[in-house]
Length: 117
Length: 110
Image 1 (cartoon, helix red, strand yellow):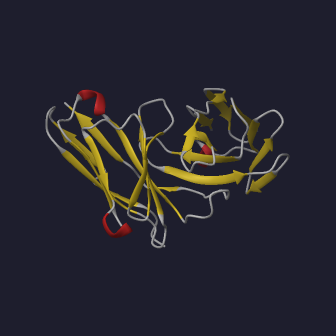
Image 2 (cartoon, rainbow over the protein chains, first blue to last red):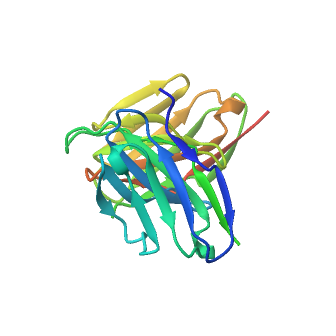
Image 3 (cartoon, rainbow over the protein chains, first blue to last red):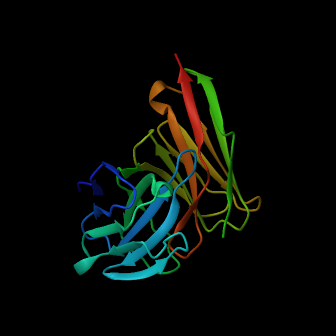
């Protein structure tokens, strides 16, 4: 078990550019989550996948953001036309996926820190 | 949405001393998670509490869930430099996503 991995760890880009982040979940984890964390705050939920299906998106996820999880394995988060307000830590988490009334521990990756100049 | 308030926002403790962090929810807690985060890094899972009155311990860290008060506490005994970091509580709303508090920054002074 190698844990959740994210790539890149750091990304600096200019305003208006597109960026893409990758997340590799723990193998056999069915659920995958994306969160965003700004300085001094806890993570905020962005979106969630059950296998390859994207089941929920937060209102924080504007139309400039898109996430995919092809084949239910790794996931990508793309931000188009980046803005300075997009600067944050983007965290990916995965969980095994139990029944709807079971708690399901989420394990987080190291995050991708995005800086938009 | 569920709101979690953590207190204190930050604390400084002398090495060897005990410390307690509180997490209070605006709604009933179905599952409460404690994570630790080093600055600029990801979250490390510590413990999960589900039942009212539940208490769990791992090494020198103990967490309790008081369901009636919609509150959880995290207690560290005989703190060490390795305990320094940001502690975050997260609530499971039964809809899979977690709602987090703003975190408590712990500094351990030698």
